[in-house]
Image (spheres, each protein chain N blue to C red):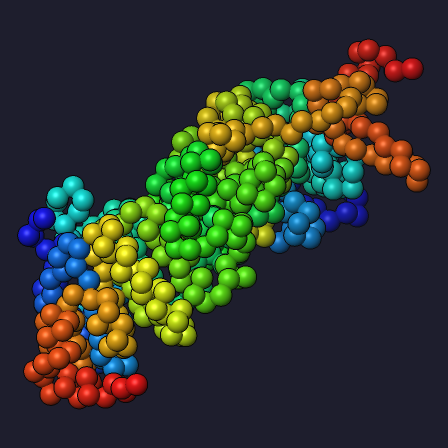
Length: 258
Length: 283
């Protein structure tokens, strides 16, 4: 286990003109760690996720990532080509809306195989068996392999998105409300899947959610955001059981009890 | 003096030709790269070869001999009208014989007779962007070309095999030029793809509506994309030309009656005629 953080943000800010997206974020993510970012709508969760995954450009601040080869790189200094290679070999991104993360008119197998082909796989049989293997792991049966995701249910699409991202064995996956819009039983299966992937592969995850139950189930640490700033960060149980910040207290007490 | 309007040599004005020649030079310098150019309105509709016609007009000289083919044939409407167009506006000699031509403008086919160093082949291209059907955004496709981000190209071939058991793309089969740019060889059948590789003739591609010119310089490596376990295959044709008996040429299937009668014949009419004049008519 390496003690240098996998991803490290210092003074990360994003302003949209005069408005604040997020402000002065200091954050470390370690290998094998699941970090949940929670907060209400408009609190800057998605902006922060966008910044950390280099999809947005920060206004100020720095972001360092420790690559598989042990080298730490400043992400804003990477060339576009290096950034893309990183995105498809070491990282994954799960969108809330599966239609943004999948090629909807390409078969499930093709969706999973795309990353393999992008990193140079040129043997159809191997690509197919690897894709099939990953589809099985996310519980998509082999006879749906050649169907387009347009014919899939919401839960299946999310699982396909996970397979598509996991096939190149990334070290870090960003998730933006992956369970949004799914009914609770489908949510539960998806959360189970993500938990088992973390346990099996030692994957690190940054997950944005407004659902505290999801954060509790999945994450080791929770960061609570409000108005673009992290108001509280700590171990998941600690934050949820003994919130220190008044806003976190309000957030935790607003959860409906069944 | 005739009453006909006076055109500049080969229809286009000299400044326009200069602009097109610049684009062509750039295209030759970067094999397979789609060079933008200020495509002009031509006196024919888009889709009839306005890109090819502009390229031909820009490179045509008084001593050139022009051949124009459409689907391999010298006597279809598109070929006849473009040939007439240049005969009238440039007064150049035209021919149907492949070895005699110095410039060959084509839609779809590359002649069966091997091309030589003294020749230029000009392709009419409807859709120059090989990534278009997978990525609709032009800004993104340009970035993908710049970064050699071509994984998605194989997704298309993967889908073919997954659905049909083999690579079913039969025309506009993507190629990699000079180990760098992925290029769409216009709607030529994949049967002709191997002819592009190490071709002694200069190959120019013009897309009028899309305003792009690209090129393959003589003796350039052109490789058709494929998988290790599903290698590129030329279209196989089970039959022989009913006129010249050729089995090596690309054959068209022609319906001969309404009783299900069919016959094969060469798509390259000049090749077929030459073969027949050598062996005499088949009984």
